[in-house]
Image 1 (cartoon, helix red, strand yellow):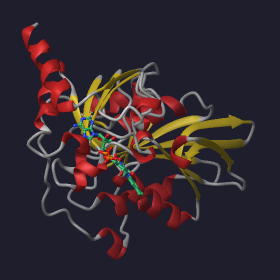
Image 2: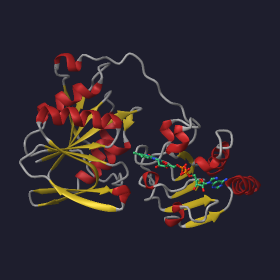
Image 3: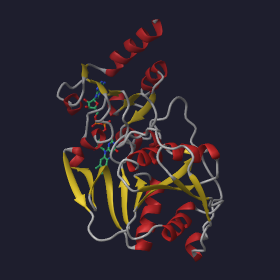
Image 4: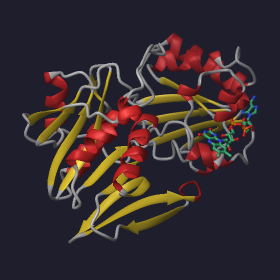
Amino acid sequence: MTWFVYAEESGGKASTISLEMLTKARGLGGDVAAFAVGTASESWFAALGAHGAATVHHLDPGDALPSAAAAAALGTLVGPGDTVLFGLTPNDRDVAGRFAARTGAAVLSNAIDIRVAGATITVVNEILGGTMLVETAFSGPGPHVIVARPKSFAAEPGAAATPAVRPVTVPDGGRSTSARIVARHSETSQGPSLADAAVIVSGGRGMGSAEKFRLVDDLARLLGAAVGATRAVVDSGWVPYSMQVGQTGKTVKPAVYVACGISGAMQHLVGMKDSATIIAINKDEEAPIFGIADLGIVGDVHQVLPKLIAALQAR
Ligand SMILES: Cc1cc2nc3c(=O)[nH]c(=O)nc-3n(C[C@H](O)[C@H](O)[C@H](O)COP(=O)(O)OP(=O)(O)OC[C@H]3O[C@@H](n4cnc5c(N)ncnc54)[C@H](O)[C@@H]3O)c2cc1C
């Protein structure tokens, strides 16, 4: 029985979600293999090994759209007793769907935990905005597919660092593998990324406008923090979608999350409620965000934030 972890290369490195899933998989029993998709690199393979992959099956799709080629190639490696882990990210989900359709594998999505008891694999996921947990077990021989929420498992090295690397050739999948990437666009951002930041300052509709949202940027810069936002702000066009935190945005788990002018809708909370310390600034003392905040400031962001910024600048 092998746990295959889908591991897409991201900027020459292992994606954070792939390292999180490998760390989890190495504690579940059975063999652990990474299915690595991207341009070969010793440091990338070593990181996959250090996090639990005894074997790295490497597919370099070149300029082919990776998802169709990856799903087809993965289908040749995975057997009935195996389970494949994907992250809850757009690319991973694309491959997971194609792979499941090819193999008939059952899919359990939105996993925040995985448990194994004997031959039974149970997946835990949250429903109703994280207010209830549901446990679902696979029946049947597999292969199984689990799609895991980012930040559900800590990425911790600790396994043998030199995996066996096995190249995988791009299969001829006919029309499905014929799509080519003709251009790439990388969104530039300053400061730490939302996925890796220890501190995040997020702004909501209460910031008032795109211009006034700059207070969030200023505070984040002074704290060395990443900037997040609610969907209301993204939908208003104040910031790009890549900054959205929540159910249909990113899941984050920083040491400190500062929520400025955010009401605390369930769909936002589900993406940030596991932050270690939550600080909320809202002028409405009844705002739901105060229900999960460790420190709450009832006040106008346009008064509180400039004072906070001035105090930090004076240090
Ligand atoms: C299927 C679905 C998926 C969704 N996915 C997401 C998601 O991924 N992420 C997400 O964030 N939302 C998501 N939403 C939207 C979500 O339901 C809320 O509408 C959104 O989170 C609200 O954003 P907000 O807190 O910025 O705005 P509001 O709810 O309008 O809250 C603004 C807050 O600012 C406060 N405020 C106003 N002025 C000031 C001031 N001057 N000083 C201090 N406080 C002030 C108000 O008291 C209020 O609490 C989703 C919704 C659906 C239906």
